Length: 122
Image (cartoon, rainbow, N blue to C red; front, top):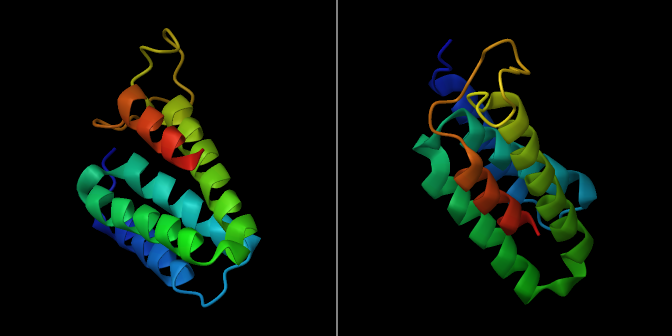
């Protein structure tokens, strides 16, 4: 099974759209964090844009600390989304012969990338 470009574009639109909210709340942070984690789990084509979105949130938090709760929600959902993607969509070598999603795997997503996303979320 190969996921094509439309899901990536939809996740990208969600991440960018909710990042541009003037004063984000916790809900927007959660949506952006999960969209970034899901987008990178599906395909690495969007990784540079997702890295820019993460940098945007970090700079935004640095410039206006009053959105700290939304930034924490972004980081937490990025962490949980990265770990969930690693558990559900790796090639099964980590979990032995167990395939959580019925054999659906992501060819480029693995522990190194999940670890980078998780560190970015903390």
